[in-house]
Image (cartoon, rainbow, N blue to C red):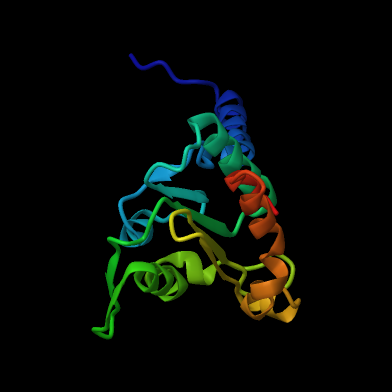
Length: 187
């Protein structure tokens, strides 16, 4: 003898499960930063729901990194932020056979490889349909930032060409005023 639910109760439960699944999608967002050993690792583990990747010791606590991840989920859903203690040991081989080292390896991997080897390159602005992914990289030891904007940012004057000497000013200021890494990312 099997125990079956009445048809209407089964339909109601199915509807409830669908509502829970839709409402809970934000719960699938990453809750903490992902530790990586290289820019290649970022490409390997990249996910559209993960925004913060950490390499090395940046002097930030798990709580700060979790709060940054949450802030990006709410305010920069198509942003990928990579915070690196240093890039000296980085190596990257492009798909066309070129080999890069150090800062160049990270910049090529995240500026080209990420978009070409993951779904990062297909992130789109909800209203305009333009590609909308951005990458921000902070190199702590090298005292450098890198930024890669997409078509949406370029068309709005906030793309890569506007980065140096303009959009990077607040990040530079945050780092000069006590090494405020979180503020450098947010600003």
